[in-house]
Every structure is written in structure tokens, then in C-alpha cells.
Amino acid sequence: MKTSNFDYNLPLSLIAQRPIKKRDHSRLLVLDKKRGNRYHQKFYEILDFLQAGDLLILNNSRVFPARLLGKKALTGGEVEIFLHRKKKITKTTVIWECLLRGKVKAELQIILSKKMKAKLIALKGDGLWLVEFNLGEKAFWQEVEKIGEVPLPPYIKRDKKRAEDKKRYQTVYCRRDEAGSVAAPTAGLHFDKKLLKKIAAKGVEIKFITLNVGLGTFATVKTDEIEKHKMHSEYVEIKKEVALSIYKAKQEKRRIIAVGTTSCRALEAGAKKILETKGFSAESLCFWTDIFIYPGYKFKIVDGLVTNFHLPKSTLLMLVSALAGQKNIEKAYQEAVSLKYRFFSYGDAMFII
Image (cartoon, rainbow, N blue to C red):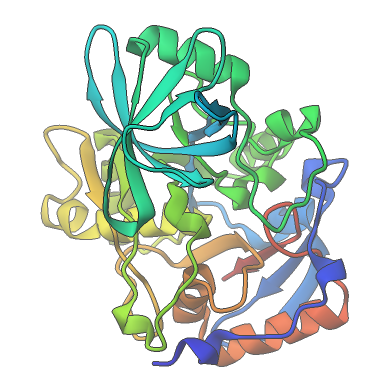
């Protein structure tokens, strides 16, 4: 299957640069994947399309300020460090896999603040570097929270960082106990606490899983044939009581609706274990996944999906095409462009049912 099959024309003016004032007032395109029907609503009207007994699964991972700006110790040249995955911890240092911007080489020393310095150890695969930081884990996280910036997607242009991004590029239900994602599970940005209460009052069961979104969410598909593309691995946690809820919903033929492609990927990656154990796992499911979903994939858990509008030729566009049908998605995107929907992370939403 060709990557070019998932291209479309998008005017740059439709790429949302800032969040809408009220989270749940974004536009919502509802797509019936069986009939191909499309409905245009406000996001808070998702209530009209949810049913008592539905199981709504949301990704509660929290975005941390993973973008660090530093200067080379010898020359003062600028270097950007994007934290990707923690690799090793000692009492006085932490080592991370990182993506770097700037001219760099092994052994380079980078000054990030008065307290924090970094040293490049070695270049790994996929352009990732092993980077050693000179602080123990607690002090490291304190400094990251102080000096780091939210790594907004490259299509969101900022002359300088905005305070609103630190709040609005975060779901209202994210975990406070652990930071894990370098990008937001953006479908969840449309929900506020009031809307979630209304959804629960309607009889919809709401559960949370965790998928820590990695740098791979920004990675483009560089192969002509999508089957040759390799996804970055991301960490997933599905608590045992959630796994049981998922299994029960499947047995009772209730709809399971994922909020975001991250929730969808986590559920499908854990499907075999959940279904084999009938949800009665002795412990929470914790694993790394590089699952790649594209047309032809047979969904085992997910029936419906709340999602944003995705980049041309992206793995996310391929995933929604797998669920809704490629022709349905093509028509929906054409209509969204003609009606001037707002696209990508801070943009409008789609509900595939």
C-alpha cells in the first residue's frame, strides 16, 4: 500500500495555531463508518451520539516540558534537546535517549542552566543520542519542570513560548503523579470536567489507560510502501480493573470508544492479553508497543474513536482510515476542508461511530 494514497491538500490557514477559548466548543464531525453519513456538530453535542452502556477509554498520560534549550560549553552554539526515553539512573546522574537539533558530536558538553549540564555519550539508531545529565533523578525533574518547554508540534509556530500552552496542551484528566508524554493525546483536549460529568450521568462508563506519547508521534513516513515503516515504541499501562471492564464490555456487546489514536493503539496492542485472560490479569498490563495500524487491520477491541484531523501521509491518518474506511475518511476530510474545520493538535474533532 502506497504512502501517497494518504495524501490530501490542506490550506495552511486551516492549521490551528492556538486552542479555542472553551475546550468543548470546538467543531465535531461525526462519521458513521457503516453508512458513510456525516453530521456537523459542536463538540459538547457528542452527548447526543453516546449511549448508556458505552465504555469510553481515555489516555491520562501527562505532557512534560521535554524540550530543553542549551549552549555548547566551548563555543556557545545553541543546541535543542528533546527528551525521549529514560535509560539509566544513578544517585548523581540520569541518562536519556534524546533527539538533538544543532551541530553535535560525541563528548560534547552542553550547559542547560546554572544547575544542569549534559554530555553526549553516543549516537544510537533513528537519530537518537544517549545523553548524560549531571543531576540525580529528583533534582533532574525539578530542573526540567523549571527550564523545560512543552515541545509543541512543528506546525504550531511560536515566536516565544506562551503560558497558555503549558495549560491547554494538557488534558483536564491527566495524571498528576507521573509525567510521561512529549506530546498531548490531543483528542482529549476537547473534554472539560463538566462535559465528562454529563457523559457519566448519561450512563457511559469512563475508564483511563496510559500510553506515554513519544517523539514518534511527530515522525513522518519516509517509505513509499507503508508496510516498511517502523514505529517508535511507546510505554503502555492498563490497570487490571480497566482490563476487566474492557472484557466485560466486549462480552456484553457494548461499544468501546477510544478517545484518541493513542488510546486506540494501547487497547489494540493489549487486546490479545485482555481477551485471553478474560480481563482477569493478576497485575496491571505494562508493556512497550510499536503497533502500526493501517487499512486491512482487524480491530479486536475498539468500536468507535474520538480523534482530531491528522497530517497528510501520517500513521494517524492511516489508523483512522483502517477504522472508518479509506473512502469514508477521504470524503470526510474533503468536506472538513471545504467547511474550514481547524486541523491538527489544537484543531477540531471527529467522532467515528
